[in-house]
Length: 348
Image 1: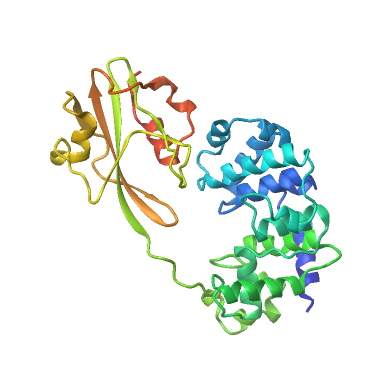
Image 2: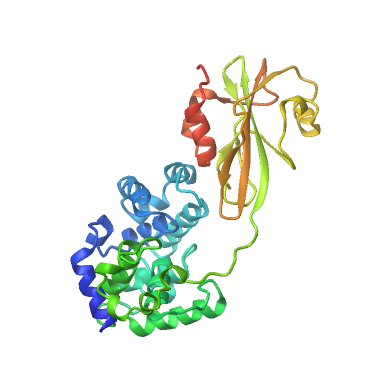
């Protein structure tokens, strides 16, 4: 069986109708690839459409304000993608005079672009035979060829890239790359793949050996850390609150949040006033407090789980200049903060 021809034909019949497949514009393809990283199509599609509508060209994106971009990105997570997108847009617009790089090696130089994204753009937009390797491709290749090498090991990354490169259709690399990714997304799915109606079932090693659920193989991830976050939601008599921009590097850099007190263990109401950081924050000022959520909200990130409480603190005056509560929705925030603002009744 010709693996490549079978996949390409399957793709021509089964591919989903997605807006970025109707264009070869590298700006649109790049935008779609960055948004869809670690994001399902159904979640990412509205964001793609919003970005294309608000920033139809790389110049529009480059001339935007970072806060506006982060606000539009809110809910997608992994905010470094948005910051890198903005940095690369400015590079293309101002330093490359709006001309998108046309080769894999040049595209790879863009901030936030790795091997997969550069391969996808180069093959789809410029017909360069550079093979993509993402989670879907790892799954299809490891099952079809029965490969046990861990996909997140140095050896595995090298092996699967070489195999994908050897299989690529050099005359039509864009469709080939999209075909194998689409095949992994809707046919050779992680759970309950459609093996009974699979065009590759007669020569799939994992299917023949009953190992579909055992591959691809992954090395164990690093241990996830647990943190306790306590957000102080101050409400003054003038209906103002404290809302701060995170300046430190990290996933929430440049996003806004309420003052944060991080503790080693869960903070209980009877220890709130006597906690050293809380005492230092209020410095003897009078206040009344209540706990919004008695059970910690668990916010799961790739490398850590945040056990979060929101403390409602009523004060006559804020300790420093504040933000009008009615304006909170205009700031870019982590989804954890955004959900709280949407749910909590500030009684404005």
